Amino acid sequence: MAAAAGGPDPLFGLRNNFYLGAYQAAINSSEIPNLSPGDIVERDCLVYRSYIALGSYQLVINEIDSSAATPLQAVKLLALYLSSPENKEMAIASLREWLGDPAIGNNPMLRLIAGIIFMHEQDYNEALKHTNVGGTEGTMELHALNVQIFLKMYRSDYAEKQLKIMQQTDEDHTLTQLANAWLNLAVGGSKIQEAYLIFQDFAEKYQMTSLILNGKALCCLHKGEFAEADKLLLEALNIDAKDPETLANLVVCSLHNGKPSSRYFNQLKLSHPDHMLVKCASTAEEKFDRALQNVT
View (cartoon, rainbow, N blue to C red):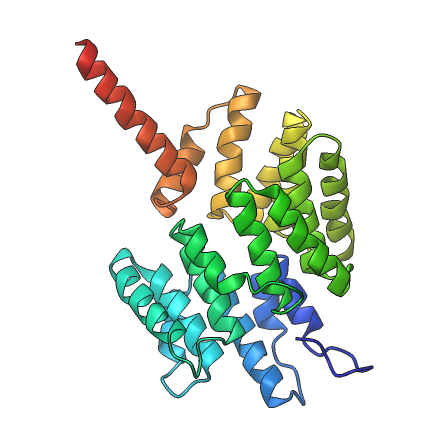
């Protein structure tokens, strides 16, 4: 992923926009001249992953044909997986088949997509089989994904080890900074302010995105600054009215502020029925109904 030694990285801006959630900006800035064949494939992967992040699954499925390079085929598989519940089983079967193919099974993008899909499935051990290559091998994205997986497993100790590998590779990398902020949020306490400063630094340097605003808002929630968190989340909602994390965080923030949260929850339930908050609420409702039936 690095540029040639001593030369500028032609994909830096595009990659950075993608990492920070400026997906349309990533797409708009993708016309870059004189790219190497390898850079063209990476560029196209970033563009199609941006379309996936915007929910344009069918566009990706339609445009990537069977002759495309393995990394692009992997991205198409992610679009298929996310496009509808009916496609999930087929996508996972294809993924397992490709991972078992000695010719392509070790492709970094294929392993990254495997990690993302199995993380969606909440099969964290299976995800780590493909992403956690150990040492300093693998891309920065694989290490960053590992940090996310370990945090979902409540293993901040392992997440910290991954972060150290990233810091040794490139301390100033956007993904290293993001991973640092995620870990600080998970650890809490005095680390919350450090996380806030990372998101604030992004806000000053780059285009404001829902990801940056949600990061700042989460820090404010941790610090008990609920009014400020609400302000930041409403700003994020103006950028993307269907962003699941913004809606979920607004539900939590509204409860703390004593404001109605049902509208945000209903929006989340309609647009992202598989979101963790929706599933947890549904499970709680079922348990309550069962308990009520036992009483009556």
